[in-house]
Image (cartoon, rainbow, N blue to C red; front, side):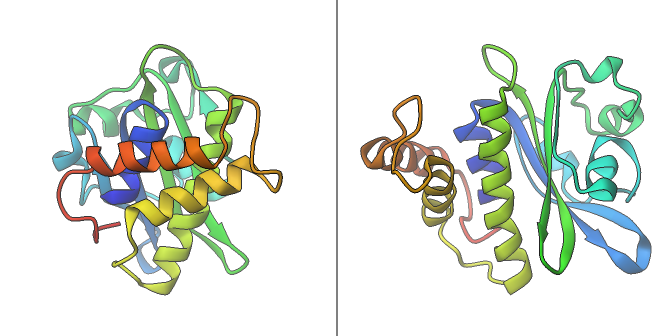
Length: 187
């Protein structure tokens, strides 16, 4: 849940989830979630090609959808089953050279729409989550995960538009760590 909570915190979103692929079943299983319906999301299984998560998993393409109700890929029945129907979504695959292992979804940015920069941040978090999933390590500290993702987004020069320098990264890591409930060892 630490990665999902970190994604929600950093992207100022109401909810986030991680669904991992179970190849033998051709399903995505939601393994971690943060937000109002997190408890009803974890354990939910969907077809690996169903909904926006299935689209992202199947194509390997990250997407940002400003109005999910108008998007034909959105599977409303899955959202209604959880009790949380989002308005906007960022979804990005968890992938590496060996393939795609799942999907990170971030739902409903507070105070506005998701931006392309938000999609970049979500992709950086997804890359780090993929490392955790692939290695089977559950003990990775959420703060180091967030720091690595933010440093990747900041780029080699150490700063990007918006002032994401070392001090800003330290401040975001500290704020996110304070907002993380529960067990930081759970992805």
